[in-house]
Every structure is written in structure tokens, then in C-alpha cells.
Image 1 (cartoon, rainbow, N blue to C red):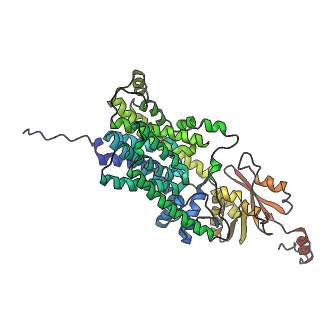
Image 2: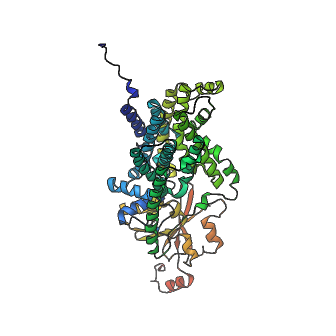
Image 3: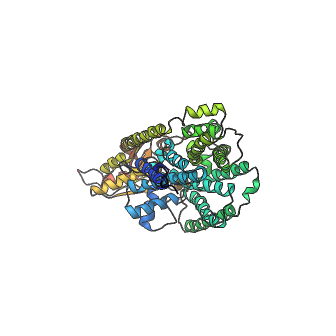
Length: 531
């Protein structure tokens, strides 16, 4: 026996140190300053239904400005409501949902890459996930993408784990529930948008295993059945709730995001634009998919399957006619594992000379410098985006100005402004309350007009109309009112903008005959009364 004690592995190879490092990076990039700016873009469409859940106690039917709102499933509003109950209703608590999702995504990448390729590569994948520039903004916003991404990421990773390996009975139970949670979670958050990614993972496993028989997995079957039952039960309960409504909810069909006239070129360029948006990690696909003479080891199978999943998912989205690369973001959540696999190949697997040179002169050359540079860029982006959101893209200032302007007891109504930028109305009502004024907000969706409701609200109401087109092929809302001859009773009293959403506020005057009656009954020396 030698008296020399065994050497301990370096600290950076320790599991808990690596996990702590991943959590620290997530904490530095995604958690600071979350509440420093007002809501912007479509954040209000996710936040206010969630807060309504918490306030009303009705957890089945989302509401936006008192309108039943089912454009998206209730998953994101549920999460925001839960955080509101724990931490209060604030910009920070609403955005913390996405920050937590990004943190969990980094942990998932770390755990699976560590299992698939070894300890050091888990750290590479976890850090790479958090340092992906594509995720920085949605990971700090009360938007739907980050929460949806982490469920799709979980579903893809567990699908590959189940189909590429034969888990024992004990592991199969845990994987069944994990896969069911990923499948049900992604549908409850964003409907069927993530299904192409899971299909791509299953196809990639078939290609790598060279047989479709891998799909005959009891774990996969049980997971799909469990997730399907969960989704079906929730859909049934929501359908019951819809049947009780006096009016139909606001809906949105998936066809709005698929093939559209004039978008064919964008659809055809979707894979290229998605991979460009996912730089620098998408470049690792070149090395990951390079041919090798090495035996088909489990490491190679997992790495190739992850790489193929990304490409097959982009191909499926293209066939479906998706034209916005933002909707392909879930597929890119596997790219950090592709980076880890590419690094593993450079170290452990023979590469063609050109691939070895490419690796040496790109990411594999001083990788920690790349990581440090991206980390600093993430911190700069954090400060810049929060400042930009605060002074430019948020509707908070426009809402406060509106709250200053509108008199006590007034009613603000409209359609597109309240639909696309509901935070303007929310901040207006909040600011009016601080001034001791009450403000009622009524969203009047356009589908009500089609059912016979008068597009002109009652006299004395304040009507907000957008002065810009929301869709390229549609006129502005204000222009539609002008074309319909509805402007004779509207008097403009306020003009403002929430980022690019220029809007005008009008007060509704009485009809001409009522205006005459009011003038005849007016007290001498005073202006006519407005009914």
C-alpha cells in the first residue's frame, strides 16, 4: 500500500460546482432588472389574463380586459398567476416565469449533455444554452416563448433518451412522467406549435437506429397516452366553460401563422434564417454531422440524433408554411447539446482534416474566451434592452399620459389598441387611480361589430383607434372608420403612440337630433349639455 492519498479531481469537474456555475450564469443574465421597465409588445396579452385568473379565481377561462380570451391555451397565464399569488402583481413577477424557464432549460441541457457525453460537456451545453443570444430577450420578458421552449426541450430530450436506449423498468417510470409532462406542458402553453419538434426527434432516432421499430416503445406509448388524457380533460373542461359564456371568446386560428400569400420566399428561406438567428451554436452542426469511420457508439448516436432533430424540425416547419423564424425557436434548444457533441468529437473522434482545421479556428480555439465574450455581450444586451423597453417599446408612458388626460369617471373603449397593446389601458387605469380618478376600460373586439353591435359606442365615451395598419394587406383601423363614414360623431381629443402603434383618442358626440335637443334645453350662458 502506498502512503500517497488518491488525488481529487479538479474542482471544475465536480458535479455540484458545475451545476452551481450554470445557475450563477443564469442568475446574472436572466434575473436582474426584470421589473425596471413597463410591459411591451405582446406581454400584456399574457400577463393580464394571468392576473385575472388570480383575481377572479376562475382558472379555466382567461380574460383580457373583461373579454373571454382563448387565443392561446391557459398555460402561460397560469404560471403568471401562480407567481402573482406568491410575489404580487408586478413586472418582475410576470417576467420571472420566463427567467425560471431559461434557468431550467440550462439545467436540462447540462444534465442531458453530461449523461450523453461526459461531465465536462454537460457544463459546455449548460453554459452554451444560457449564452445563446437568441434567447436573451424572450428569457427576460413575460412572453410565451421561453416557457414553451423548455417544455419542448424536455419532450425532445426524453424522446431521444427513450428511443436511443432501452431504459430499465425503474428508469422507464420516471421517463414516462417526464415525457408526458413535456408533451402536455408544451400543448397547454402554446397548442400544437411544438409538435413538429417532437416528431423530428422520433424521426431522428429512427434514422440513427436505422429502423422505425424503435417507435414501438412502451415508454413512448404510455407517455403519449398520459399526455393525451391530460390535454383532453383540460379541453373538455374549457369547452364546458365556453358553453356557459353569453358570447363567444376571442380566438385565433393556427392558419394565421402558416402559408400566406406573399410569404412564400420567407417560408423557403426559413431553415437558413432560423440557423442564422441561432448563431454561433448552429455552426457546430457542420462538425457534428461530419462523416466518421468510428464505430456507431452511443455518444455518436445521441449527438447525431440531436443534430438531425434540429434540421428535421426546421424542414417540417417549412413544409407547414411557417414563415417567422421565431416559431422555430424550440428546435434550436438542442443546439447547445450539438455544441457539446461537436467538442466531444474534436477531442475523442477522428475528423477529416478540413473539419479539424475548422474546429481549431472557430469555437474550439480558446472556448472560454468565446464564453466570456458572450457573457459580457449578454450583460450589455441586458442593460440596453431594458433601457430601450423603458423609453421606447413599452406602452407605460403612453398609458400614464392617457390616465392624466382622461377625466374622472370616463370610459375608454376600442379594439386594436386594446388588443395589441393592452398595457396602455392597464397603465392608464393604474395611473388614474393614483390621481384619485376612476377609469373604465371596455375592449370591443371587431367580431362583435360583425354580429350587429354598433361600431360607435355611446355618447361621452372615449374611443381609441389605431392610425397604422396592423397587417400589411389591411388598412389602418382609423381609415376603416373613415371609409365607413363613421367619423361625423367623433372628435379627436388626444394623440399618442405606444412604440410604433400610433393611436388617436376621440370623444363620441351625440347624434345630430339629440345635439339639437340638448342645445334647446341648455341653461342660458352655459354650453349645451352632452347626454
